[in-house]
Image (cartoon, rainbow, N blue to C red):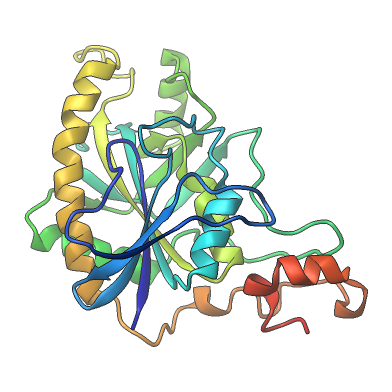
Length: 285
């Protein structure tokens, strides 16, 4: 049975439609994940759901333990992970309430670990195309099938937060040609690639950031109203995409580590080999 992970963002703290089989709380070499993993069946697939900020939304974007979250997904057998995230729009045609499946990332974070490696083992994975193209295509098709307005492609700027952008920053990001801005998905994409997981983002536009003078600046009350509607649509998209993802995986994500580990296996510390076994085990004895 195929196994699909879903990381829920702001407003998406549970996944409707899952026939819950078990709730799993994991400890990892990188600390505790955001919450327990809800494992169940949805549309003939095994789905693993994790609320990124914890139930009740108690973790800042910078406080989220991205390494533990993705390590747990890998350990539980997820081959695909969909990261759902609320974002601000940087383009006129991406209106609040629209969905975006981005194809590029810009990193403006500064305080977040974003690799499983170090401590005696070095690896460099390709990241030119940070999202799985096959999974992204399936997300776009699913969004269209359920009647959502979805934009295919675009650059996601990942900022540190938790404050929203200044007007100068928002204008700069528009000059860069970016499509949306958020605070979470970059680390997830990097770690998923290292773990050979197919990762794609379903971005839910809630506002126009603060660049659009004809619109009021970002107001959390209005954002929460739009989030509620977006989350309902996101759940429909995820339920649809589950049927579209097929085994075997033939994309490059599934073998991203094959030539990426530079360190001589004989000198990798045994404790590191043990800790990273779910990720490097098939390449390093």
